[in-house]
Length: 342
Ligand code: PEP
Ligand code: MN
Image (cartoon, rainbow, N blue to C red):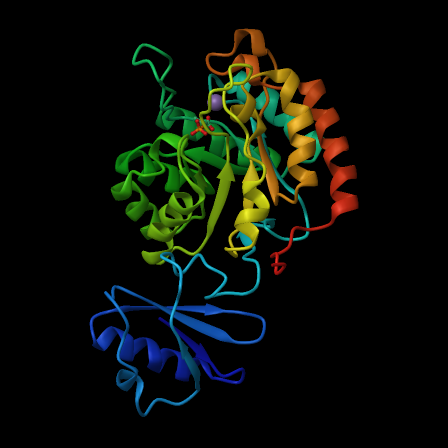
């Protein structure tokens, strides 16, 4: 159930409705929009009695929600969510680009890549300090030491830091040192981690699980919003199919599909989505053409020596080329939109 407030409802009227929702044991989530505030209700099983809201002013209507997800849906908020990260943003006018190595390997490697990333124009830097690796013998990341290097990158280059949390302990550290908490494909349905991310005070980049449906991705995001963190960015990173020419099959059609259902920004990862350097640039162009709010790409100064994901990492030159080409495409397609078409 959703409560739509009148266009001129005051903050006190909104607060009174939220208090009433809490008084019956549920949680109220005010979602301010350009024309009106809607208040989503969570914690209820089935419809909430209309009588609960008797005597309250400023309410325009009570609307049942038809989808299994609530807070991520366009039914609750009709305008795109713009996620502000310092002076940068994701989901707004500018194409958001997050670039950097798969993993933070050393201070020298990270700074060399960050210098090129900043010069190319990206506002965000990626790099894993905690790596969820398929093999327990593969490089697992530098941990807190890696996060300190990333924090120094922010200070030096003004780049906003996006880095992955793999469990509650690393999430607390990532929240402390980073700017955006990445939840990886392997953890998209780690519901306890999603709840902790929902209690964090930093935005969350949620990657699609490698066999997750669109609905499962939105339900995973719903876990985070339902805990009170509304700053979630979705990310398509490819799914497993029978195709053998590619690491994953990058499902770009999910971008307009999400934009018909959700106000959350959606970005694309053509690096994990393809697994091969030569495919990253073409798929980055396609991602921007299809209307994505941004890109997350792996870049390395020595891909042949990378401790993880070297074969899919762009060289510094290819990264610079990508930035120019995607800017031109974005200039043609404009900022992404909510799709109201049938
Ligand atoms: C990553 O971004 O380095 C990563 C591990 O991605 P994914 O979770 O999409 O596999
Ligand atoms: Mn990687």
